Length: 188
Image 1 (cartoon, rainbow, N blue to C red):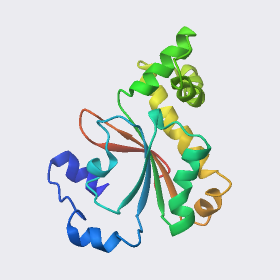
Image 2: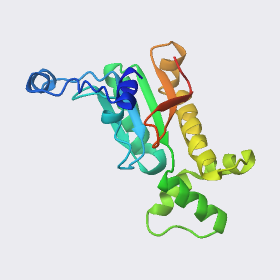
Image 3: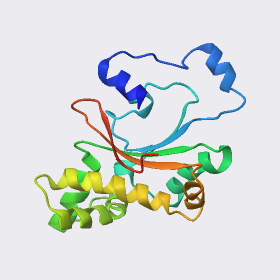
């Protein structure tokens, strides 16, 4: 979050981005966090947290949709190298969430494999419909983050790490307008 404060203020340090760091991590990596975020080009985790080479494992899918391969990728850091933090990072004005929301609302499946993304977002849609609100797409985006973080927290392999305090799974939301990340759930 300190890196995000630097991002918001424009006082960037660009840490761990030089040849010495490249040499240091060339043989082995020990990222301090794993980020599951959206594919949106405006939400690059390494930049908005002002981090560098070898600092983060980063997985990106449309709307933070998960399935076995994505979940396995998220599990990799905590289960193989003891990475102590997972952040599920949603964001403002998410196109994938908007497309899924409209698909469900209108009863029109999305083309190709985009429908698989929508199906993965269905629980968030159902929660958003239940909650209501002025902007149902934003409600759905936030629901997707909190539901995904909760699922990871209770995952059969990650859950025990969370229970013993060696892993935190945080749900967070990025504002495209301000650059700030807001913690929604799971703050350590």
